[in-house]
Image (cartoon, rainbow, N blue to C red; front, side):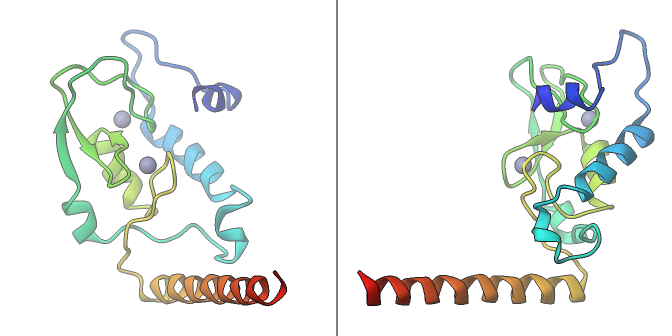
Length: 147
Ligand SMILES: [Zn+2]
Ligand SMILES: [Zn+2]
């Protein structure tokens, strides 16, 4: 992932340099929305914000080891600093991940999806899941018939 950020021309901040969170996040979001395998392009825009409930229920943890960095602002966590943990176990500064999840519902690192409050999107997700299951059923049937 570090290489990925380097390719995108991002670098760690110099001492005393303030991160331009909004600019950085905007670039990150635009890029994130353009992953070409993302939902195989069936959902025509960035998925909606995470549900308020899901955001509220994120675990808060205390950083124990050095050398972990927040994937959003790329700043290293300090030992004993508090961080928010996504269900996929990725860690972020509270401010970073909450701003992020107000834009879109998935982990900026691995795209693990939190539930949303958007009925249209939730219906789309269910439909997509059903379509995938049907495809698997057909494959299983096909395999059982031809092997
Ligand atoms: Zn951060
Ligand atoms: Zn993750």
